[in-house]
Length: 207
Image (cartoon, rainbow, N blue to C red; front, side, top):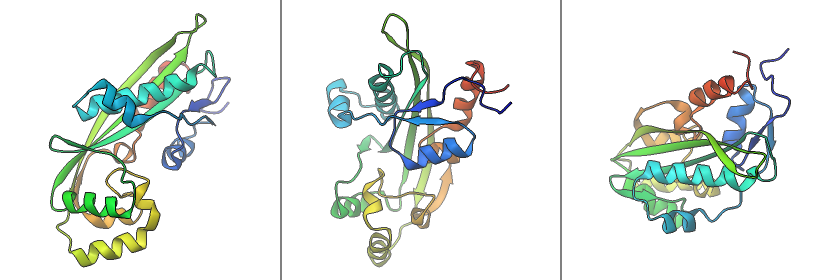
């Protein structure tokens, strides 16, 4: 008998290769069903200012959007927001946007809020939140030079538009930082330890 003891794989409502890789490496079988939702529109209509609440809302909405396709199955939604003080950032649209974000973040400490939500649609057709969690990590960027910034953007290429803050710490983005405080999986956008704990409680993983 393996570690995963549920009859069905976990449904991941995300197209993130990083999240997929983290879960696969932890022995979680997956069925991928990325949620196509208007993240900025949903956040704007909710009129939330707290970055953790924004991340939690989007994680729930992603999972709910997919749950109807998999009745009775556990669906995992995840989201991550970056905040510098009271300012909340979105993914940069292009390289110029990435440059602007990095100029604002350099020499500063920002917070990453990573949220997960497990949702299951019940027999009555209602998508119920089984579990949700928000974790925070704080990262301090070096006061790097414009020359370094130019070289980084060339080396990282279009990948800088794939993540808020224009970096991936598991890749070249680690060179931007002088100090990191927080769980590694939170920084990757998936608080893994709390997720594994609830999957055990739900009878999906061997305890």
